[in-house]
Image 1 (cartoon, rainbow, N blue to C red):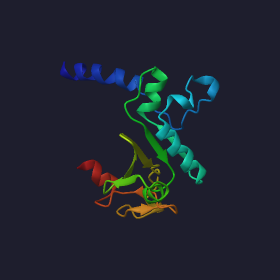
Image 2 (image 1 turned 90 degrees about the horizontal axis):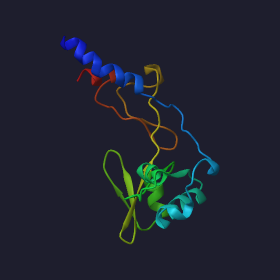
Image 3 (image 1 turned 180 degrees about the horizontal axis):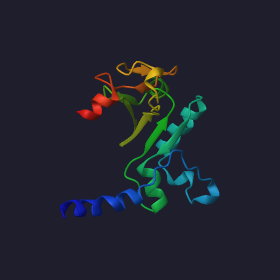
Image 4 (image 1 turned 180 degrees about the vertical axis):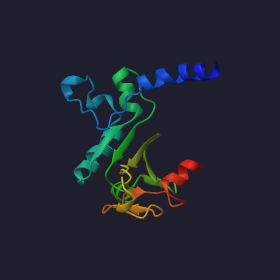
Amino acid sequence: MLKKLFQSFRTPVRRTQHIRSTPEVLNSGQHSLQKTQFSRGAVNIVERLQGAGYQAYLVGGCVRDMLLGITPKDFDVATSATPEQVRAEFRNARIIGRRFKLVHIHFGREIIEVATFRANHPVNEDEEDSNQSSRNESGRILRDNVYGTLEEDAQR
């Protein structure tokens, strides 16, 4: 009886899960967002990073909230630039965090959080030693589990 009860809880969850492996890009005709609706500081960061040759996008809750017609409480930026490169572009920036570094850029009382894109983990153990941390050519972390293999980590 308990087994049946637990299965009834799990089954609907499996059906409703939808995992998107690629981003969904909406052009300006598919949404009502305008650049002027976003924080001037956040837009400035994105434009300066793109002008310096990096990819940079407003991401996360601010985009969701704008699409839902809610005023965002904060703005986040994702970029291909490393935290050190972001810091070099903005004198009002501060790197925070030890393991996963973020950059906080201050515009008056507003703080914009800037994160570096995360790369995917390798599919095969042959691609790299599974116990070692590695980075790609631009310095992004590819794999950071230095305390064992994925299998050992799953068993813990």
